[in-house]
Amino acid sequence: MTPKILILGAGGQIGSELTFKLRTLYGEEAVIASDINKNNLEVVNSGPFECINAKDYDGIKDCIIKYNIKKVYLMAAMLSASGEKHPLAAWDLNMTSLFNVLNLAKEGYIESIFWPSSIAVFGHTTPRHNTPQHTIMEPSTVYGISKLSGERWCEYYKEKYNIDVRSLRYPGIISWKTKPGGGTTDYAIDIFHKAILEEHYNCFLSEDTELPMMYMDDAINATIELMQASKDDISVASYNLAAISFTPKEIAATIKDLIPEFSIDYTPDFRQDIADSWPASIDDSLARKDWNWQHQFGLSDITKAMLTNLENHYKLNGV
Ligand code: NAD
Image (tube, rainbow, N blue to C red; front, side):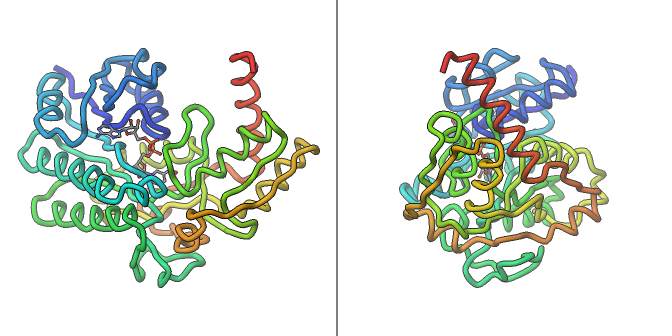
């Protein structure tokens, strides 16, 4: 049987688009999508799909044996804003799922793993601008603590057991197909929906909160390029990854260029504290050097792509 790919958490914002792209590259049957629920019908209907709880070691193992899975992308997690509401559940999901795939690799069931980390691994004491690959890391959110711990465990399994596990510290990912899953950078998606539907947005971060962001197409390309790179070129367990940085005020101005009636106001909530603990911009020169990472989308490209795709989406759905 030809070796196959398993995606855990394939129904989510990034997992869904990764599923579509990997199916385009390797064929529908080569990519097994899975999630704890069947809510994302586009994913469920686009090729093989299994209901799997990423916390269920035996469930993942059975699927790996059934389909001859060699590569696993673990995209199931609880994100930053949801994690602050459910700290222990976030820790449990984020760590148990990671140990499950690391141990399945250690036991010889899988050959390589992709596991996403996040800019949430950094904290108040980290240099905020052009944050280096190696620096002070004292995250203040449960999500960030789980991602930093996960990075150390990935490094440990890599060094002790020669496990091929690769990881990226994603910035905020902007996309239109699947709604985001409870993160602090979600405002940079909500703002486009509201711009089209109401020509107004009430932002939950203050106008000058600068954060690193990336368009989904860039994030998917980075993920696939990292996994296609030669093992010898990978020098760290988890890479800094960047494209652009902007504030709510700056993104609002690019939207106003295309929708002149658009207006914005600001009511920061608990997510402001989370955002204030994260970097404003990231130095990803190691990724650029090791496996030639290059982003494509700037702020005005993202704004045009988001508005065009969402306008079509709402028209098709009769809104
Ligand atoms: P998401 O919340 O949109 O999707 C997560 C998916 O996991 C959902 O479909 C959910 O149903 C599924 N899931 C939840 N619990 C599960 C379980 N027990 N078993 C199986 N599936 C389960 O998240 P996302 O935005 O697609 O993020 C994917 C990964 O990328 C996560 O590790 C996240 O921490 C990381 N990340 C995302 C961003 C971003 O901006 N979206 C930024 C940095 C890092």
